[in-house]
Image (cartoon, rainbow over all chains, first blue to last red; front, side):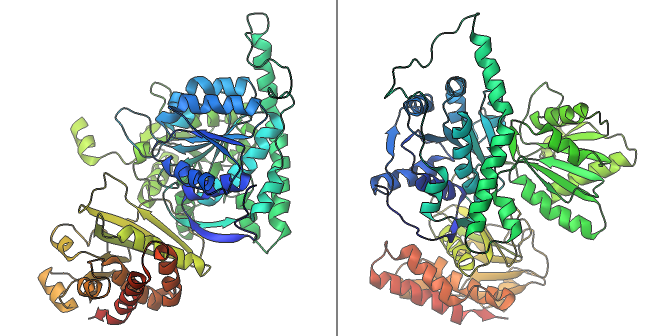
Length: 414
Length: 191
């Protein structure tokens, strides 16, 4: 039997990796299969110590690749076990074939993705090219701004996945969140175990005579895909149920402040000071936190700026996002991933779709930032705002802007 | 919010000291981040690590580029790296050196800024028996930080040192670390 380490709620100094490892310990999954890759390695290092110390009942499967790790999770999940894994960047790329198998077979696996740039050149630092490359593989994708959100999103992600039999990818920025110590508020072990409950699959391979993964030719393949689309359309309702339940759990003990509860529950988007904003930025992940800081500073100067942080990228919250963009004079979309040959980054396309669906047409600029961990700090947020302000004043600014490129590189282009 | 940048060399424990600081601040109910610069780490190579300390929630997730406090735990770095990078004249410098703040100011021609010095190498050799300058320098930083922000208390930091090293070190070495921490706090020299 799994050991109870925390009878009560605790506030602890944890890195993002430590926080999700603790969440995994509290969830106590039946099977974890993973292969180490920076910056995810620490999760497996910590979790495997929980296994060897007998803190969890988990069967830990060490495999020879990420492809095998996710394959093992698919088998475990369909056998009726709660299965989890973790990876980063190139590791997710090697899982790619199995991503669509997991979602197509409706295995509610929960995957921790520590966002890392794809090679080449080899780079261990953060960007979102790994997750964005997998955005159309039928997984629910949740992004966290900090270690606290990574902890809470993972716990809620398990419940969401199992409600709809859809796999969940819970993402946090590599190093920026995964390796930085931050203040994390943890639930008591039993609270988490009670919240996620027991996993059961309606057609488990171990106890029923069933076929999983049959061939489906021209006569039936398309219906499977239509079923996946229908399931994704159910996510909104299921997510709201899960987050309502989590909110009640958070409120049930102690005296957490409202802002903390709002931060910790799963949502599609988090608007920040958008009500009267003339300039609205749209961003994902840790950069959103830095943007909030700059918004506060610029508002002291009387500048009306707001942010919409996207927490769930798949399924994408088109209608909710459009609502927050309606009153903006100009929109700045920040992408931490490239599409090479697309008009802009992957988030840009979704924002344009959201606007079109509502018949909204207004100035918009795209910003590519932070690829391979390039710093995106206060100065760079101000640069983004400056470009948007100049555009509003009528200056002819580029549609797509790379932020914080090296000065010597820019010189060499002249 | 106070932003701190540590300068050390791989293996000297700057990252550990920075983590202990954040843990102590969080233990007191406030907010803190500890975030090293990850590159190709190797023993002896110059490295930087950062802290943010605040009584309010922190949302910044980027490098510290304009620190309020710079801590240099290895005196040989003064001739190698630009420890003043990104600081303004209000910044505080806490340096491990046998020199006085006045001597450091003259030798490196530092304008403005408040300079503190501590002979952390001697303290570490005496108390820990090896040049683990991170712990006395942490004591020195805690003193400055407490005067500035009212946190963390030395006692809380002592608890975190015990928490961090308790299982790894012998009781004697742990005691040596605690003495070194306290001496760093008490023996800091200001201008």
